[in-house]
Image 1: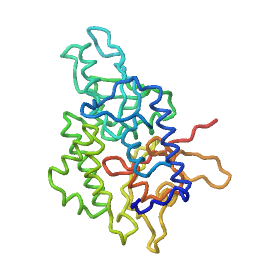
Image 2: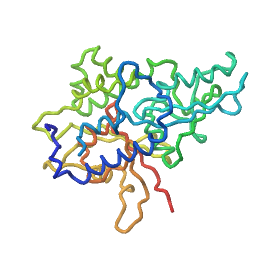
Image 3: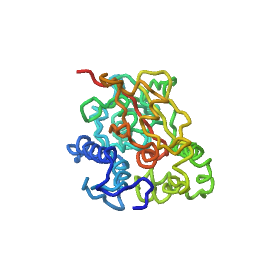
Image 4: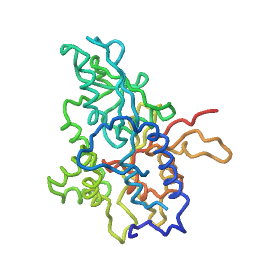
Length: 52
Length: 275
């Protein structure tokens, strides 16, 4: 990784880990039960993989 | 372990499940069923609700149709704030789907800007990007871009094309290696209980002696009440994209990874739920 604040996984700071975990929880909370809803913007060219 | 770049995708593809219901006093020719939609957190209400408009237009007479606007529990929703900010600020403690009321008359002139076409949204979006770049790089990056590059940023947002948007946006996220980050961090702080639309100040990513500034440092300057004192129960939640980053999070990292497509870090400060 070349990003300025990036560090190796073993040294991952608590704040970074917490952001990853919370974003994953957010996806579950806000999207898991609503996958059958229509998307506001249609993706006609490519389809995103649902691996969140 | 997730990569920092995954955060950009998670932020971009955040969705709010929403149920749109027509206001009870609107006159309809036939019954208007509620309409359900996944709204992109990083977009704007009036940019992603064509389907909602079409759906309710079918139930109404042409002469009863004025400009469409939205309301949540009595609060008119400002289309020029990102959808995720509106949700975090007004509805984050509500059960999903988010229930939005749709209106076609009595436009609240004092609360909302008119949005007659997508070009108004585009102008608002591009002016935010320019303002953010003025703070970050004295406007040099956005000014060096061509018209087609500006269009690429806008079209990326409008059509929900992550790669198209980020191919250009990454240039707005660069800074000289000898610096500790941007000149200033473009951020806005929103509160529910305030007449002031938002708080915005000049804030650098690091102190003159090179000490990295964190979210806690920023709040200490801009909104100290959001930082709990010793033994005190948390009075406020500090929410960005529906999550609560730790106060130790560097603001430069937040700006690079949790900014909205308009290049601002939008921070909502909401009262903590009392047990």
